[in-house]
Amino acid sequence: MTNIPLGVRGKVLNGTHPNTMIRMDDDTKNTGGFLIYQWWDGSNGPNELGAFDDWVESRASLEQYFANTGWSVEWEEKQ
Image (cartoon, rainbow, N blue to C red; front, side, top):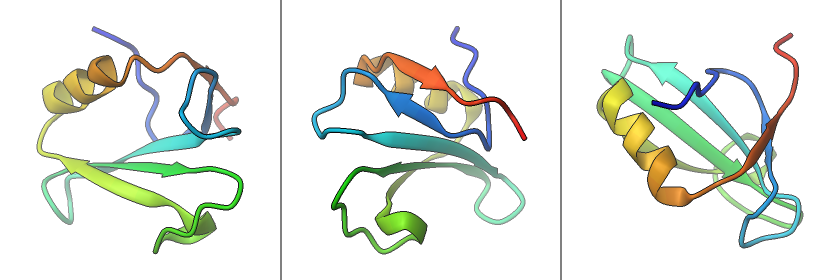
């Protein structure tokens, strides 16, 4: 099990796009699950910062999603 901080930005060190950033948010009060935001230099997604999003239904699903990506992440300090 990985310690994935929620609401904290992280830089993906081995991403497909240069300077890929991610943030995982607890959205259980609204959707019952977790949102995964991804953006990079020049991304044009529909969310803040041009981010794209994915959604998973549980913390276990978030852990599996993260494991499946193979991401190596440098997390920022939580504000």
